Amino acid sequence: MKIFVDTANLDEIKELAEMGIIDGVTTNPSLMAKVGVVGEENVKEHYKKICEIVNGDVSAEVISTDYEGILKEARELAKIHKNIVVKVPMIPDGIKAIKTLSAEGIRTNCTLVFSANQALLAAKAGATYVSPFIGRLDDRAQEGVVLIEEIKQIFDNYCFSTQILAASIRSPLHMKQVAMIGSDVATAPYKVIKQMFEHPLTDLGLEKFLSDYKKAQSA
Ligand code: G3P
Image 1 (tube, rainbow, N blue to C red):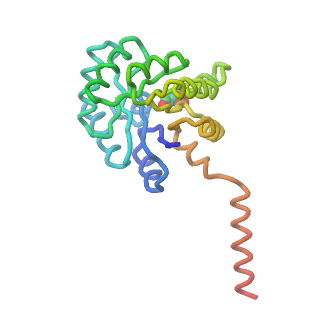
Image 2: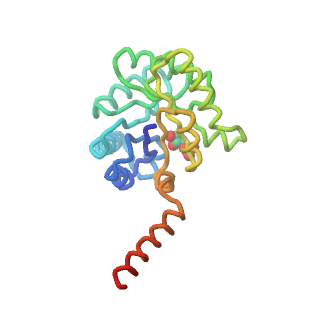
Image 3: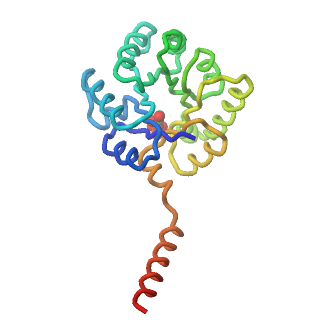
């Protein structure tokens, strides 16, 4: 499973990229606002910086909601770098735009997917990725990981090449669950990726190995 980091923070991206554990980055307008990037040109510049740090796909989201507006923005975003994947919302105009962009060879990530039927429509339109938001479903007492299972079954049934990008990941448990289901990608916040390293027995074990080593040296 590929791991993307869901952030627009350059320091976070840099740290994880240097460890060699991330395969890409996802952003959204909320994450860009969080790091204080505003204005069309600054946003483009920021995406360029992200693409220079990480060797993998970088999702850049449109803010238009009409067909023509989405196309215009998507074509501009795609010009920034070859690794840019244009994130388009799961709405009728978005699906229509994904179809057109896919015919033009512009890769897309259909976002805000909350049902298997929405994922099916995105795949039929030729989306490169679909982003089911599992944490936000959990927030509404619906098990998000079940949606990943459903989409996986549908995509396998019909051999769709669209990749499942599990999003709105909130915990290391989510990461394990979507990896076991066979999600193609999971995008997680920096904090969750760092949590994946942790186990108290690793720390205790290392402490013991090092103290035994020291004892043996001084004996
Ligand atoms: O990639 C989508 C993701 O950023 C949404 O996460 O935690 O805002 O539901 P969250």
